[in-house]
Length: 541
Image (cartoon, rainbow, N blue to C red):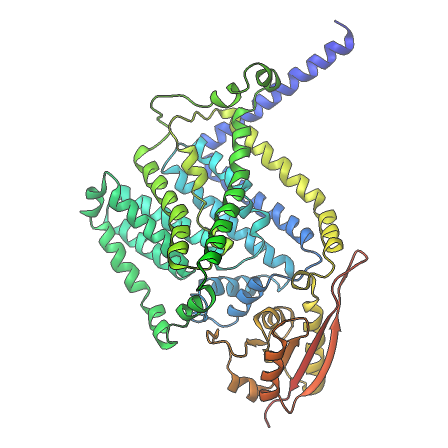
């Protein structure tokens, strides 16, 4: 053997030894009762920080999403509801932005902090179903699920459900095992917290109820105080919100019926198929990458050439598996099947407008449901493989993110929803108001797409008022707007411009009128130029 060949072989041997040592360390930490929580918390924090940096780069040419600005606007006034949804998303945003500055990066940090908390809670769920090694594998699979990274860029009630729904499932597994009044109390409080996020969580509550009813150990659970204490606690905890619902004439239900009701069954079918295809495509990423982590071996190319199926079959074996709690695994399988199948079927039966975003909160149990299959054998090297895959992908996206942002604006120069310069408009209108009246700009009137960004970006954070909206957020009123004065805004590129013009003519006939055009440039690439009709209504004398 030549010297060069010897050195190469020695280098490869040292590399394999280092990998084995790192894999052994990672498996030992993941399996250790004391070290494992810190490993998971550290991983979730690293994931949140890295993806916050990625999103700051990826979205550098854009203002924050309308949903994020809306949650910020809700958080300016703590109420028991905000017209469209229950209040928890607004409360969380309100607390967050009393600690962090009102800046784009802070919204992405909020989204990633939410998902980081979700990862830790999902690990706690997994510990009740599988051993610690598998539980950490589940966490990394979730971190590779696009909902927990680039698709999770916008904080809204859908994203917050990835904290409250895992808490609900965790409380149910605890109550199912303990069957005590105290565990029932926690389950009821978790259910109320979930319902205060979005009414869509009724799908998960229903799935948990079905699991409790058809599980072989159902009578042990149903004869205990846990489920009945949970129901009573949930009802009592929801009383303040239910009172608010009655006071506002159940406007969130009106909103749901107005926005998501369809008369065309063909359109409903098409949307349901799109919902199913979209969510299956997103789930494919963590499933395929996990399969690669399980199949990866030092001489994988030789196995691929000789016995290609052996790469994937070696991770499967018959027989009992002490690393899986079969009783709790059955609960997870039932819940995941129900929330996967139930909503599309309901959408078809009731002719509902199925949004793809509704799947954001419903598939966080899929990695655990797969890893909990007893015949799956998870070797410790698989933990290193999947962690390495996560790290390589994350660092690669971080390095490429500035280039991706520049390329996207170059390819979509007329994307008014993404690249319209609303932040510049907010600052310009704030200056115009303060120059004229030397007071705080209190109210902005316009569509949700323009009003909420003004609330977020203006230093005065004016309360948004949406003309003609039945499901008003309750942050202000037309009477208050006329008393304090307001700035009305119509987007000339919006098909609803005639409606906006008509409302302004009726309610801002004595306003000072301005025509303003805004345009953003990013790395030399121009965004869309948008013309705005502005109506400045002075405060009442």
